[in-house]
Image (tube, rainbow, N blue to C red; front, side, top):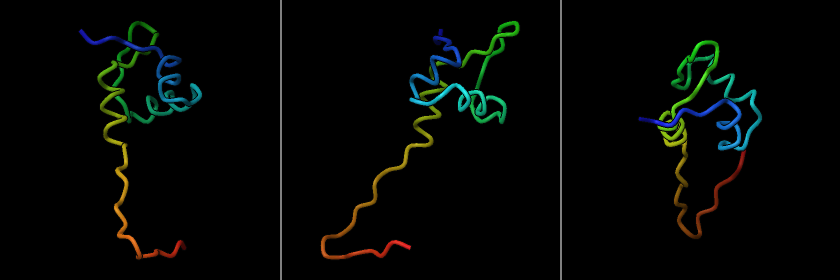
Length: 69
């Protein structure tokens, strides 16, 4: 059984305010569970969301400078 997190707990894990996880829920960008009128996010859904949105660094060869727009 997966641990269910409150919106406040998710915000704390992500280091954001509660508006961000609420917006993710409203836009259906993260899996959530309705328990009566309460909304909970499975811990595995949060882990998957973070993994899907993690950007890997780009390896730049030494001596090759890139201009920033």
